[in-house]
Image 1: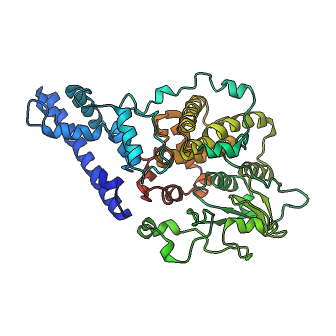
Image 2 (image 1 turned 135 degrees about the vertical axis):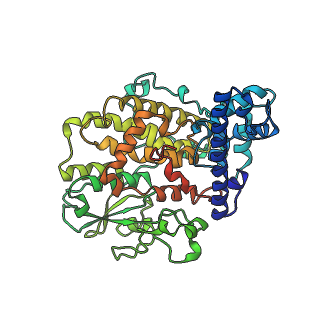
Length: 480
């Protein structure tokens, strides 16, 4: 496990990861065999790893001291990121029985101290120093999902006050809040609309600049694929999932020296990424697109809906782009607008942007509050989805589903670890997990999604640079 978390190369990490899970699988099978023998013969010695003594062996004690740290620490921090001990049908109850027999006090099993030690010590894997103190505090196999329940039925005081915005975070004292370590998302400056006088609806006129790892880009890519006629109306240019040294979105670099270890090992990651500006305007990074019409622009974000005729940015607000695509395709249902906007407000504040506030804030207090709202919102979603196939209907996804999907899609393979949102996984919420799997089956969602780019983009430019591509299996498709 240490060889995973402290590996210096991607190959060394992946080799160690295979060893860890080959051994965990072997132990689970071994214990299952012994358990079956115990039930058949009544011989309790078969309940242990060694299987050849009347009580605990040294092997049991050594194994237990590692396994109690696994879900709480090694799984996320050391990127032993394939399967939690709690998911093993035999290994998990075995661990509980061994700990009870030794005794938590005898094991010095102080989970808050253990978690704090690792997250504050291994700074290469945790550069912002925030400790996920809300998870695994009382139980080494339980992140505390039951502590985060939507007791207000989706209508907490903040929502009833109508203070939520479906596209923007509160900008009050933004500079001071950022200085204190809070993540505060900026406001999109370009809010024009397809069909306006300056931007008539014409084929082969518009291009959408995106990066597949960005969730705001992801929502517009799904909308482009889902709404009829938009793929023909708007072309796409895919930028590199790793920003350059100046933290600017860019095209795929030509210099092989700029590729990282994991990209050398997985060249398939680079497929589908543009190496150059397809509009022939000489863009190399995202700010160039804004500066073409406005040399003083300080904008740098994506997605960018760009007009090749006027050489202007139509919009860089993903929520607006999703809605204008729906309107242009005739899929916009004005009768549902109130329900959609209400759902979007909470989805944006507590889930979409909440994930970033949890993961990208260096303030412990901000992190913990964001985690609380995020998982209470997950409980709210799970309750809603018990009553309908999609968030608001049984018929087809609405705009609310499209805006929710990128975050839920990333949670298990990325955010659980990278954003320290390790209270629970999507698979722990049966109705939300069912919705995720249903959404993933939709052909438009499949065309608009690249989970490998999500994993490579988030992990490939932070911390120790080890990329847990095994996380592709985390979203419920592989049920262990």
